Image (cartoon, rainbow, N blue to C red):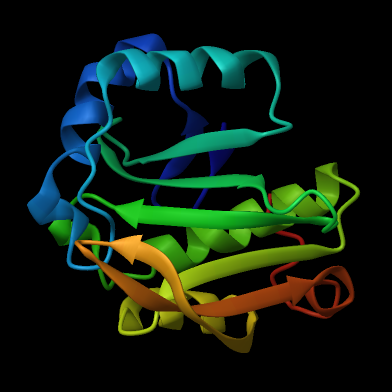
Length: 181
């Protein structure tokens, strides 16, 4: 577990699965930019089991409040095999937790954790070009916009453009928050 200012990042446990799935599969809570596909119980359970043994492919952290209620999640995964990088993804499930800086802090904590524990040189965030809240998180965390991948993602029945942001190890080392847990 990694403690933030008003939340904790922790791995998904089997007893979290039902709550996590209902939050993850709530299309209204997801907002307008995440895909509409629903996660199946069996595939979610398999992912959690795989993550228990290795974080090489993917690692998911729940963002839980002081009452141990799941309010969001952050995760990282291996991008293309020839990049020395990880991509970070995130979602805030509870509307009342949005626009309070929680996700920005969670991404900073995850970025520090990754640079301190993995021999990577690069972190990436990819977001729908109209997702201004996600863009703000990336920028506040020091990620630089590298460009637009035109028609790169299929979501909600159409191909959409994705803004690509990255943070290099050398840039992270210069940030005042690099020593977060």
